[in-house]
View 1 (cartoon, rainbow, N blue to C red):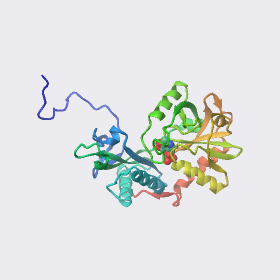
View 2: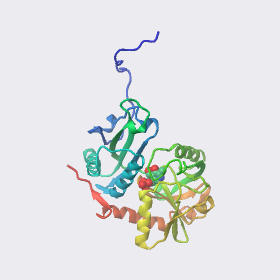
View 3: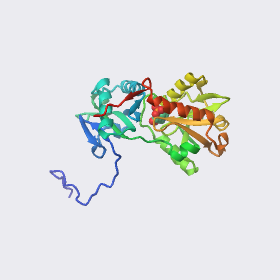
Length: 315
Ligand code: PLP
């Protein structure tokens, strides 16, 4: 006979939590917590339905990079998903600051999340859900490691199609990543280090956590359709405007990316990162190109400039 236990079972004394958590501080339900204690309910629709939006900003040498742009994108996503944040922009800014300051990281990866939450009556109506805000700061991480940044990443193009913008608006930064994860496995199977997946028309879209650029005849191009409008992508446009390079958003075919003079990817997790191989094709004879190098240098220089960055207030 199945017994219904009247009380919660005691915790399995033999169970040891072997998970490793990054060093950092999270904010949840009005509290700051070490990462190992930052947990959500299994009933949260953010987890059950991927009904959530988020944003990630980084801190470099004690300064947030382009925080206002990240907050704009986050608040835009929350509004489009018809969620309500329990805090205003000023309070969220101070929570993000506190997560970094309490963790004492000088370089950090800082994430803010709003989930649908769940309904107190278990109603299936999303309008009745109580939305939740959480945030955390962990050490800075990059799509590319040191060696890959020096020699360029090896990328494979997967046939996997990125979720169409008519299904999910890519401007709402989201966790619909099954296509990107499948692309990654395809890339690993092909002996590459990361993936690019395609849009519904077969053009190059984006990769797991990054946008892509090609350089041809000295001009830059990045896909326009079905991709997250990345803040690093936007930063590349701003840097190009500053130094007089032409940059446009338009379709890129498989043949065009392989015929490019230079290729690089962009993400808050790593900045501007060179690509020197696409499938079996070497880009720029396998060397990091001069336009990519120049933009990488400029990008990191901007991190100290007050017009592009905000100091973290440490205690
Ligand atoms: N594309 C996707 C799907 C992403 O998840 C991300 C970042 O996480 C990017 C592109 C790059 O955006 P950003 O430069 O704002 O980090």
